[in-house]
Image 1 (cartoon, rainbow, N blue to C red):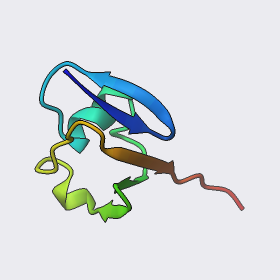
Image 2 (cartoon, rainbow, N blue to C red):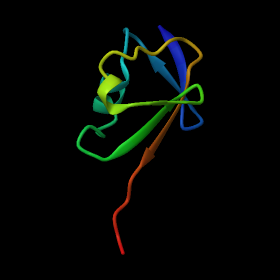
Image 3 (tube, one colour):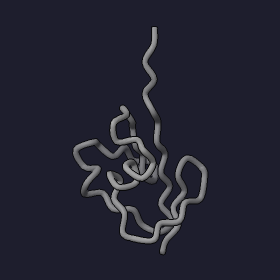
Image 4 (cartoon, rainbow, N blue to C red):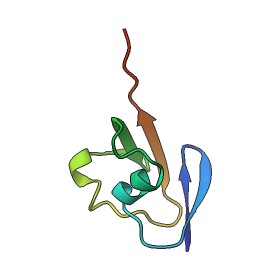
Length: 67
């Protein structure tokens, strides 16, 4: 088990988790999001291959349409 910080909140992960799996767990796969891991943007094309480690800081920004 390891702990990551997601948008300022501690989150416990019990299995090896990728950015893709985290977004799936949070119900955000179909949303337009930007993901930052430890201060670096994770391109959507790398969500499947970017694995989260204990102590990672994740920021998820959801795009909101309007006008």
